[in-house]
Each structure stands twice: as C-alpha cells, then as structure tokens.
Image 1 (cartoon, rainbow, N blue to C red):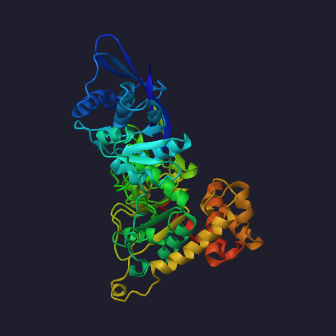
Image 2: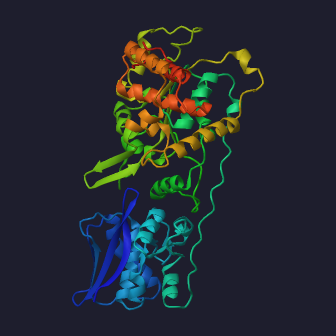
Amino acid sequence: MVARSFTVAFEGIEARLVEVQCALAPGLPGFSVVGLPDKAVSEAKERVRAALGAMSIALPSKRITVNLAPADLPKEGSHFDLPIAMALLAALDILPRDEVEGLVSLGELSLDGRILPVTGALPAAMAAAEADRALLCPQACGAEAAWVGATQVLAAGSLDQVVRHFTGQSPIHPAEAGEVAARRHLPDLAEVKGQERAKRALEIAAAGRHHLLLVGTPGSGKSMLAARLPGLLPPLSPSEALETSMVQSIAGLLSEGGVSRERPFRAPHHTASMAAIVGGGRGAKPGEISLAHNGVLFLDELPEFARTVLETLRQPIETGDVMVARANAHVRYPCRFLLVAAANPCRCGYLSDPGRACSRAPGCGSDYLGRISGPLMDRFDLRVDVPPVAFHDLDLPSGGESSATVAARVAAARALQDQRFAKTPGVRVNADADGHVLEEIAAPDAEGRALLTRVAERFGLSARAYHRILRVARTIADLAGSPDVRTPHIAEAVSYRLAINERVLPR
C-alpha cells in the first residue's frame, strides 16, 4: 500500500503542490527517489536514512521507492527531506497516514535528526492554505510561515519531535507570526545642503513612482540624495508587504520570520552580472530587480554597467514582471520598482563643471553617456542635473525640509492615488496609468495641451515620452492638491524631461 505526504516545488514565488508517494515492496533492499529530482533531492535518501537511524528506526529489508508527482515538474532543493521522511514513516505505520496526508511539509534533515531551516516557507504556507491543509516546517521558519493566518503552522525542531506530536506524546503548539521588523533609522533629507531641484525631483519620484536619473560631477551628492529616497516613501501596505516578503522568502532574506513594512532599497555594484540583476543561476533565483519589488533599485555609475545588463531592464520597467527563462526552468517574478540611477556627465566627470576643464569635451560626454541606449533613457521620467555645491554653502546651517515633512506630502499624494485607482486592477500609482485611464486622470487644460504639443514637436519626443510627461504632471498636481492638470504642472514636468543638455543625453 502506498503512503502519501505533500510538499511544494517553487516556480518563482508560486509554490506548486507535490505529492510524495512512498511504496515498500519485496525484493532486493534499496532506496530510490524518482520524479525528476535534482542532486539535492536525490541525496535526500541518505539524510533520511541517517536521521531515522539516529532515532533507532531501522529501514526494512525491502525495496523503497519514493515518487514525486507530478513527475514532469522539476524538483529542486533540500526541503524535500522532511516530506520524504514523513511518507516513509507513514508507510512503516509509525505515523498515522490520514494525518500525514492532511498537511504540507518542508524542511531539510541533518544526520542527527534535526530539521534545518529552508527558504520559501511563506509561499509554502500560502499553498497549504489554498489546499486547506496545515503546514509542517522547521522551527526557525515557523514565525515566517505563521504570517499566513489562513492555515495552522506546526514548527518542529527535530524529526523525533514530529513523531512525538503525531503519536500523541508531546503536541507541538501552533507557531505564532514574527514581529514586524522595526523601521531602520534612515538618512534625513534636511542634511542635504543645496540641490533644491534634485530634492523636488525626489519628492515627485516618491509620490508617483517615477524613474529618476541624476547626472552630475563627482562629489555633487547624487548617491547621497538617492540614499534619502527610502525615507520619503510610505510604508508597505499589507498586500505589498506580503508580495515583497514572498520574494525575500524565496531568496532566503527574511530574518527570524520578521516581515518588514519598510520598502526595499537595493543598490547592486556595476560589476553585477545579468543573472544577479534580472535573476537566474542555479534554480532561477530572483535578481536585484525582483528583490527591489515595491521599493527602490539604485544603479550608481549607470554607464559602467554592462550594455547587455542595462538593456534587459527595458521590458521589466514597462511590464512590472520578468520571465527568467532557462533550459530547465521558466520562472516569473514580480519587479515593480522605482529605478533611480546616477551618472557622471563624462568619463572624467567634469564636462558640466564650469570651474574645471574637460580635456575631451564635447565628445567625452556623448561617448560616455552614449553607453545608455535611447530606448532605456526614454524610460526615465525625471532627468535632473546635479551641480556641485559651492564650498561657502557647505558652511551654512542645514535649513531645508526634513524627510518627515516631505514624506507627509508624499503620503497625501499616494492616498489620492489609492482612492483614484481603487477599482482599477493592475494600477496602484500614477506611473502605472495607461490608455484611457491616463486620458481620464491627466487630461491637461487647453493651454497645457498646447504647450506639451509644442515641446513634443520641437524636441521630437516619442509617444512614450509624451505619456510619461502626462503621468509626472498628474503627480505634480496631486502634490499640489489640484484635481486637474494645469499648465504649470505640465511646464514643470517638461522641465524635468529636458533638464539635462540634450546634446549629451539622447532623447
């Protein structure tokens, strides 16, 4: 008779239910695992054998076959250890079969029987809740999985503890959700002296999730400004926190089960590979763009990134998700992020500085920033020149607005957008608006439309640029509390689109 347990296989942040079937048959003693397992799953039989031996449970002199169904679904990871052990213990009549079949389990077994933590407990709990089953997971993953309140989570520290629970000797109490991670102390915008235009651009970017490019000489404060953007963003909503945490769970980044309401801020180095940025590698893991989902992706020294890496960002920026296609896996991850990039105007960095001479001007700038393709540049809603701050200004006391003051205006603008798009699926902020939705919410007055038409014709703007200006104008109007998009809002949005020398940057 076949004994069954259930676990999950991960496809991106989705967890697909897998049935673990265990059969004991007469014949030469052996232990085999079938059903398209990878190396880690194939080695599970040795870990299970040793863990049972540590509990003084000897395997019978029979042929043991474990099948992972569906057989055409790739099985990867060490989290199959515990469900294989559960099915085997049920086949040996040590555990009640009906109770084993009524839960989803995952966990890695050590040779002494301890259950080690694994990644993906949160998506697994979601899958268990959808299947109306309880979840059995490692003790270290219980606080994370318990955030899914729709299912019971049993967190065990060892296989012996699991056996004692199901045989009624020592019940395992349901796990409780971990603490909401406290918000980190973030740098304050008031510490930045000067750069008022760049600060305004940060506020607009945060309010409508508009992509921002900062171009300026070395030491002008581009990275410092970008580091203060997270302090302007509102906390994650419950649904956004769950989405973000599921990606982080797959990547193994959730600390002690604490789900954070703070938006992620990812700043990969310019030597990062395509797999590191977009996702891929062994198991098609999420990349930086997915780890920045619902948060900020900061690319410092943008032209120094590999051209192929930069070009892969174009489609995810538009669609909000990425398909990682590999020979044995096609995985989709969400990646709706706010892109902030910083660049020097040329290789030496001083093309735009009137106080210094660039020895290779003007070709130095076009050659250097020419590494950024026109289609990618077209996706930046805001382009801001960040000039150097005079030394005498650095001695002045800080007198600008604090991050809390600006964040309050950003939160008010986001609240307007939440109300505006409450019944529009797939649209959360102004940057997501498209088609008839954009026409309804961002239709400018007659004078503003005439201004935008003249600018589009004069500078040869693309249709994408035209619509992005409308989205930025809508956000500026929201920050001003205006129900309509008027000429000043259009004018300011246009000024950010054409802020940087058009001879240097492609339109």
